[in-house]
Image (cartoon, rainbow, N blue to C red; front, side, top):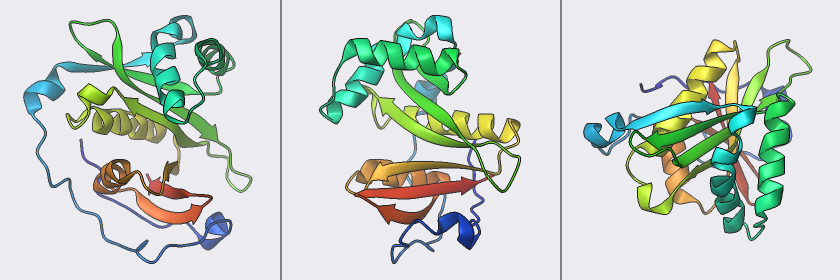
Length: 191
């Protein structure tokens, strides 16, 4: 499922961000084709608190990229977020393998102005040898569908300013770059 709509949030929602030059760029559908066969072999599954250890290793790999590896911390962190209902985690699985090859973790993003609970994609990770196969796209689309069903007005995320593959993915899906701070771009997708 592709999301094509993109609307900018009100100015008061962006006050903390510096707008880059090209933030008003138009977004189009993805320009590369992903093998439908491979996508059909992938199942996206919601992870509950009793299953948190399924994604612990992937979460630690994500943290390793930022030179912060600690498997016990990864286990405790994901378990606590799920038990306290402070996050939603989705895993990507090859149908023949119970071990996930990717995951995304979303946080609720409360608003002081609206009663709606918006969402923020805090983490998106796909195993290196499984990238460029549409898995990240499926995980982000799952997050978008979840947020929309929850009645959210938007979903946001941050990515490092030199993470060009992630930027391309998000922009192809219709996220709009809204700002820059501390080495990260802020993206938002209005639902």
